[in-house]
Image (cartoon, rainbow, N blue to C red; front, side, top):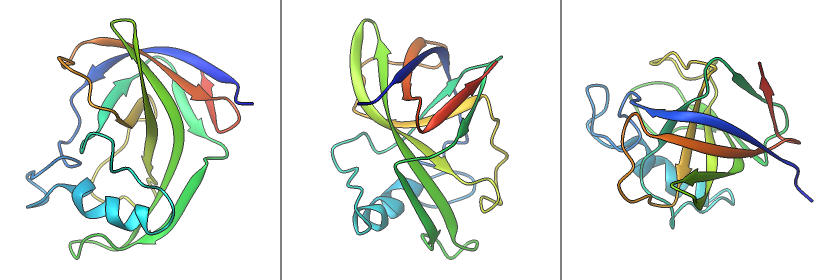
Length: 149
């Protein structure tokens, strides 16, 4: 049985790469990555094709034992392959709970963007009317993610 930790955060703007296109990629990163994740056992097809960036500051998170880790995912020819980890989560917005996954491109293989350890990136079900600056709660699996004060 999962033990959930609930944390309060705020939706913040990311690099706008996941849903793309962006200044760095002429396509959305997730559109290219999702079939590769599905072929390895994680089908994200029912989730929104983009990520929510949730600022947990002043807290930070650390993956300790994610449900999925995929190594050397060659999803673009613009840089070397990357490692990705995923852990189930739940987003609560306006008292409605949405299922999702913490999406974690490993910083040691993610060459183009610095990832703030207080910024949790989530792939979730579509959430109507959510905007930058909105407050949310996110629940993470305590066996897979630790939260640091």
